Image (tube, rainbow, N blue to C red):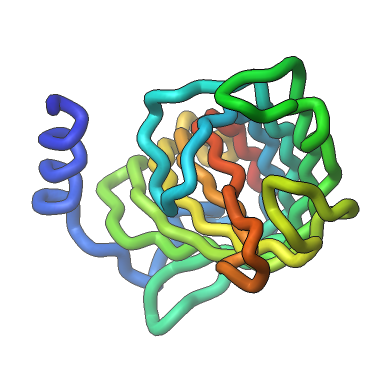
Length: 185
């Protein structure tokens, strides 16, 4: 319940983002992001962090600043590797150790000094189709809370969801909670 109040506080009291300054990259034109995420067994867009599973994501992202309807944003090229082990909740997680490539855009919705809240979406492909997501085509949704440690280095906490957007009858999705480090140059 405390987490819900904290998020509500951020939404109500943080000023909306403005395109004059990009909270993702600051004054720089390029960003590299590396993150690690813990898998969650959930089929919803925002999966509750209640059923953690032996499923992980390692992700590398290259981004450039842009705007989206006058809001600061970043456009990105992403490569990710999912790694699963063992069985839990009826799934053999090692069967989902698959590389993913996708394009995405994150939009800063709120920012205050060095803190920002963003939402993003993307589209891409996983190398292999499987029983959990019945297609190679993937759609991505992400919520993140970021903080600039210095002008060049930042960190983000995120929730990320991949699914086939019901383009196939098998759509149990991948969901992750994780942390990232960013470097602007």
